[in-house]
Length: 410
Image (cartoon, rainbow, N blue to C red; front, top):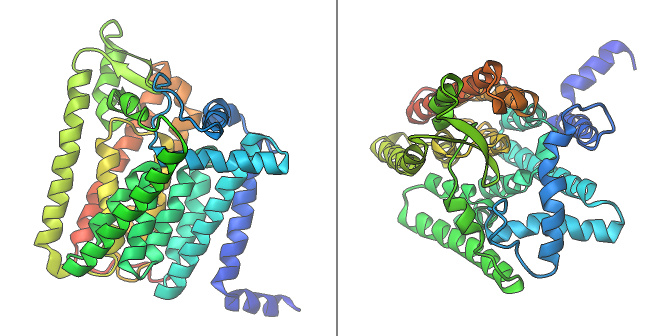
C-alpha cells in the first residue's frame, strides 16, 4: 500500500476505529501514570482517596457495615458502597491489590461510557461528543481513575441513549443513588405529562430499589448525613474566593484547614455565606426552569441534555464544595450534548476545556500553593472559578438561543 492509498484509507476509515484508537492510547497513558509505571510526580496526591480511604472502607463494607458516623470523610449516599465493594471483590478474585483493581474498574466504566457515547453519536450523526470525551478526560488527569465519578458517567450516558422515558429514568435514578448529582437529568425531560410521569417513576424506582437493597444488606447507611450537612466552604469553591483574599491580607482572622474531609476556609462570615449558598442554588435552579418554561416554544431534542448541563453548572458554581473530580460530571454531560445535531453549546464546550486545564493546574499541580496561601495558587483557582462562571453564562445563553451552534465538521 503506497502513501496515497494509505491516506485514502484513513479518510474512509470508520470513526469507530478512531474512537477505539483514541481511547486505547489515552487511557493506557492515564493508567500508567496513575499506577506509577510512567513518571508522575503528583501520583500520591491524586491517589489519596483510593489508597487512604476507599481501601479501608471497602473492608468495612464487605463485613456488612457502613463506615461509622464518626468518620467525617464518609459523605456518600448508601449506594456509593458498590463503587468500592465491586473492586474489593475483583481484587480478592484476581489476587491483585485493591488500588489497581479499583482503577481497572474505573477504566471499564470509562470504556462503557465511551461505547454508549459512540452509539449516541451513530444514532444522531454527530461525533464531536465522543472525541470531546476522549480528549478532556486526560486533561482532568490520572486522578479520574482514583475516584468513582466515572461510574456515574455510565448511568448518565445510558440515560441519554435510552429511548424509553421509564428506562432512562431508571438509569438516572441509579446514578443519583450513587452520587446524587445525576438527579439533574430529570430537569431535561420534556414537559409532556405522560413522558414526565414515566421518567419520574423510573427515577424514583431506580434510586429507591438500589438504595433499599443496599440498606438491607448493610447497616448504618444514614451516617453520611451528619458529615454532609456540617460542610463549610472548601477553598476551591467559588464562594470561598473573597475569604481566600481576606486570609492572604489578614491571616489572624481568616484561615484555612482540614475540616470534614476537605480544606475549608474559616473566619467571620464564612458560615453565613455557606448557609446562604443553599438558597442561592435553589433560586438559580428556579430561574433556570422559569426560563425553560418561558422559551419552551424553542425546545429542541438537545434540551434533554442541555437543561441538565446548565443545571449542573449552576450546582458547581454555587456549591460549597468544588472538588476537581466534579469536572467529570460536566465532561460527560457536555459530551452527550455535543452528540446532538441541534445543540447550542459549541462555545461553552471550548470554554469548558479551559476550565479543565485550569483545574489540573489547581489540583494537583498548584494545590500546595493554594493551601499555603501562596498568591499563585489563589490566582489559578480564581481563574478557574471565573472561567466556570463564564461557561455557565454562555451555556445558559446557548440553551435559550434559537441560533444554530453545531460542530458542523463533526
